[in-house]
Length: 295
Image (cartoon, rainbow, N blue to C red; front, side):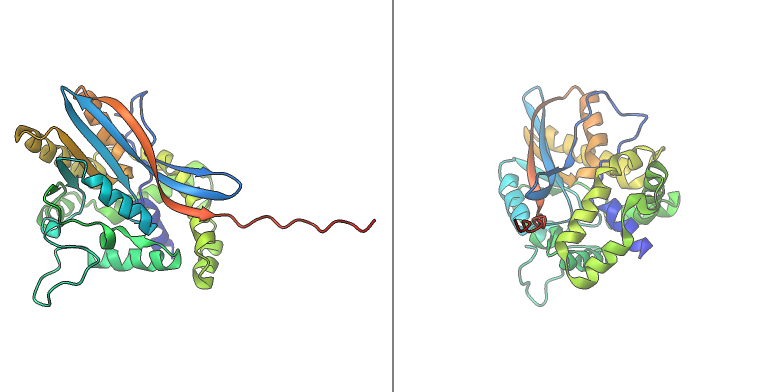
């Protein structure tokens, strides 16, 4: 259970930032917004501009409300080119995810094991999976992540992969909060999963997400999950700009964006807009009130 929770909480974007490159103008790319009636996990859409070139970072979490992914699909149409994150997903754009495929057509989406993993949590929390409801088929979609061969080669050379990053983030989170699992109530999470109470599970996981930025910021040195993949994404971005594209979108997990923003700012881009989309909308149960005393 510990291994699964560590992986979930790291792969769901948690605002990592390398302290060696953090600026005083950093932006929030994921937040929990709440009031008495509901709690909302939100990701941002943030645009940067330089010399009439607009680059928009569209943050994502990998499991969310279906309406969230439907809204993102609409947002993608606003860009000349949409650079997307998916390790080994160089063929994904040839397929319409979440729809039936011809029997003889190969599924271009990789990472079946991760889809199975996310699927368990998506079902427990009554949410949808990004990989099933993002439409990768539009003409403006361009793969901007490591191919499977690139990922396998780099991780073999460095001994650094997604699971290692997840476990390190979990340990840093526990150090910062001085609590096991970063303060996550594992017993409550297990009971919520067994009972099928998705709202309790989502509310508990949100609390851990709020402290995730400090944990990932404490990780030093170059890593494959953030640094290497961001470098690849911006290399593809440069290629598209050379082809004449001036309105570019980057669809990546929100965890990548503090580092990606830093790279854009160093290139002379300026942040020009910032807004929020709700990924999880979790109604809160009304508090029980005591009956009036008999007079």
